[in-house]
Each structure stands twice: as structure tokens, then as C-alpha cells.
Length: 219
Image 1 (tube, rainbow, N blue to C red):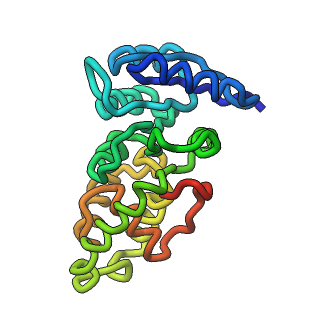
Image 2: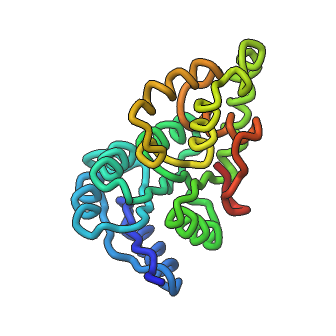
């Protein structure tokens, strides 16, 4: 089996060095490039074609959200994990909307980090346990009224199928529906959520998809 091609993006060289030394010791992970700003990250990703990118959120020139959006648009097979100090749920939503497959805090353990890289390489979504609780709390508030006006049983069979795929972490291109954006807009309106992050959590909490993430992460 070929090793996971991993790219590191962080503007702190000492932090990148620590990450590299930690992860290059793993036999199934190969560090193929490093970048210290958002513009360089985009160019390097096109050049080295990594399987997974560990992306900082706060970067010079352009931030990690914009860099993630550009990388996943130009290189749709690349899986981006946001690795940051920021716990705010709106930042998680922004990252996932930009195309990130995961969101991990820099306080994560070495075991959690390596597990997240392997999960992302396999196409599985990753959410840090520390931010999952906050997102769930926000989601419960959003759905208090929504459950009175609609729920999973107000969706058509096709909408339920699409929502389940969103909950499993698939991107729009992976779901491969020509009208996916319009369909998702209708689904979001019916279940009372604002974005893919909230929709994914809705799908999980309503039993529309089985959780498949590692014990240290959920999505």
C-alpha cells in the first residue's frame, strides 16, 4: 500500500518542524511538502498533489479557509484537515463549507492527529471532540423549533438519501447530483439548518447515517 502523501501548512516554522518529526516517523505517512502561507499552499498542493493537507486557519497573505477552498476546487481529491487553535463553531462551519473534510485542534494528542490523517485519507470526516459538543449544543437550539415544523419524515426519499450522504461526509462532487445545490437548499429549509455542518449533525442525530469516524473524532 502506498504511503499517505501529507502536506503541512502553518506559518510557524517551529510548529511545522514538530509536526514533521512526529508524522514522518509513521511508516504509512510521507511528508511531501510544507508551506508557510495561504498562497504558497495553493501552488504547492497543485505541484505535489498530496492526499491530505494539515491546514492552519490563521495564515499570512490568505487565510486557511480561502486556501482550503482554492485547493479543494482545483484538486478535488485532496483532503484538507483544518488544524487550528480556534474552537468557535462558526469557524468549523466555514472550514467545511470551504471543502475541509475535518477540523482538529492543535491541543490534539499525537495519536488523535495520526488517526485523523488516516481517516481523512480514507475519505472519512473528522471533527475534534472538543468542538463537536459546542456544535451539537448549537444544533439542538436550532432544531427545537425546526422539529415542530418538519423533520426527517417531511423529506422525500431522495432528499433523505442526499442528507444521509452529507452526514457521511461526502462532498457535492462525490454525491454527484447535477442539481445537488438546489436540492440541498430545499433540504436545509425543511429541517431548519443553515449549512452542511448542521445538516451532517442533523443526519447523525436523527439516525439517517451511521457514525464512521474514529473514537477520537466524529462528524
